[in-house]
Image 1 (cartoon, rainbow, N blue to C red):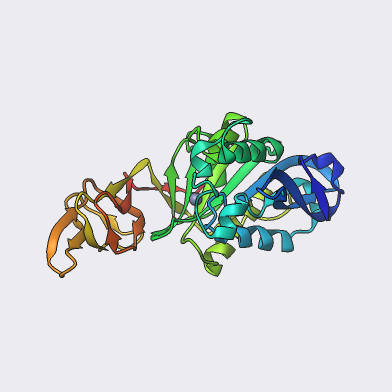
Image 2: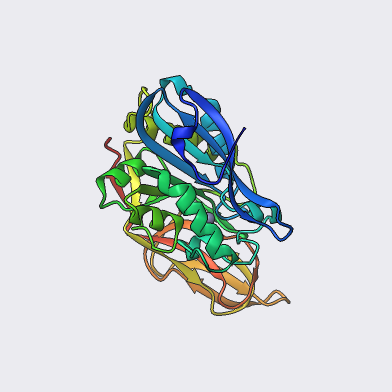
Length: 323
Ligand SMILES: [Zn+2]
């Protein structure tokens, strides 16, 4: 077992898979909070691909994606390095919460600050000590509590490398989404790290089908980057691309039912949700504000005014999944 305060890949053994812990901060009784990592170093040099899971503490599918990817990996055949951060937000996973243990969303305040709040310091050190060592990043997420997602990719489709990394996942859908500065992906991209986000369906679960799909997709990226010798396994000839997206919100509180299913195509004006009073009467209906496709949706009936209804992908079109 390796222990360190900074991921210095040169000090990890070549031709092996190693397990280790990177010390990020101390908790309130001076006990270390460490992130668990898997490191595969090839015998030959090459790029470093980083995988990060559970920056939102209730988004668990990515943990098993990393475990399965490494269990199928022969490091002696690797040219370069693969690093899997199994848990980015350790307090969040232990509490079962999306946020860090000061209630702040780590993926909204990155890159944090070395002398900031608890979450600021944590995300700042995690990026500096681990994530910024990567050449490529795949950040693994799911929907949030009370919502469901398709298996979709967020990527800058104007960039030929991130566009290719996205298509190699053979997802339900790709959302063109240039990285935002306050997310882990955004900070990594600002450092020149080619980065995509994979959204692996639903929170608080291990969902084996989408986990297997993501392992295949990440293996495809490894083949494509020359990290591993192998054939890309992508059955898709075409994939749905959305140019943009937004969430629809309620402006009426009450019991919410969202009618469309994930990946349904919606016409502008089509009914998308019904709100009922606690006595059961319909008090409001909501309609699609634009034509699009359902990327994600709320499945939580208790809707205070201003809750989310569904995540609408705009201008869905089939593009060739040419690789
Ligand atoms: Zn997330």
